[in-house]
Length: 119
Image (cartoon, rainbow, N blue to C red; front, side):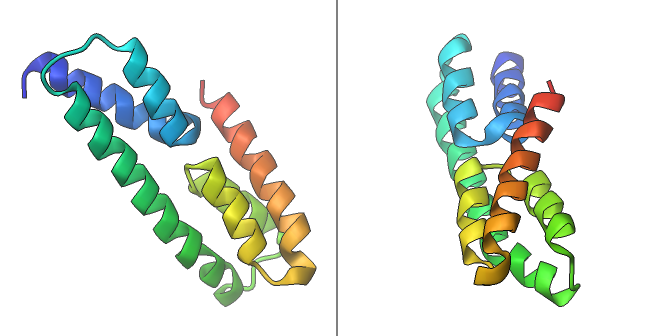
């Protein structure tokens, strides 16, 4: 991979983690100059973010229960570590019903604040 391909792949992966996942990757890819690796970088980054966020969506609620996090701590943990907003909303609904709404909204709030702050 040439220097431009490696640099654009780095920008894609950084944007996926720092902003909001796959939608950020697609928007960033549209703005980057095209090269022979553009499509491969886009597909790999979208696939990686989606798979890792889905795994986190399954595993992290188990960790919050295992470590007995409070609703607020769970919301900060889930919202700050899962990189795609769709998975953050999904994980909020996967938690026990008495905690789900508070945890969901605190997760989404933290997720979006984290992305804005990271600019």
